[in-house]
Length: 292
Image (cartoon, rainbow, N blue to C red; front, top):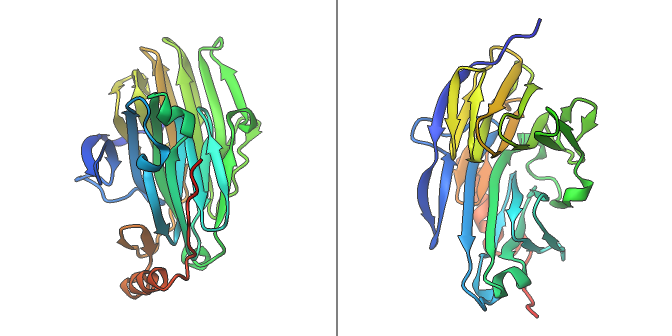
């Protein structure tokens, strides 16, 4: 019989200012730099002023190399543009998964109508590391709408599980990853409960956007807690005590050296220096945004 997966630690998110954008950071944390293969977890919620211009909001063009920045959209809409000539707007319930590979330049703006109407933007961005042998592949962006995300309702329809990557029950997430990854979106009504199988070999965590959950019937989790999973055991048991939105991310650890600098994630410091040079001379492409 499968055992319940214990917790290593509960890591409360804390406020950080990223270039004038204040958000909640759950990872890296003062108690842990990364939960291999996951490098970063940012939770942003922001209400725009009325008549905000899209060109003046969000994150302007910037490069990435060596990992996958991923955004789960919860409110508003995110307009992704990149140097491979992709332009894609994803709305609540959808996902933007970008394998940065050997380099790409992209921007992340609120959808034009969201900014102009002064609506609220909410998303979680997390970074998934790539193994050395895949760090210099071609860049690839995948936009996944809510209606293309395999979803199941459980616990008398009090729990909704959306499968973005990996497997849950008989559902397989559409996103292809370089290493085994589970990426689930979870929505609970009060009293909803679910048991989620997570391989013992996987590292992972549950993060709550809001609400409250009981973990394994004995540990209380509150909004903006990151619950770091132990490797012992194979079942994550969650029960809501309030209406709750959460995500579960888990994956096979890569177990390679990690060198980082800003938007670049490689294995050695020399590779970081090369990434900086390549970006400066235009080898990651160029993004000229056009606003209507």
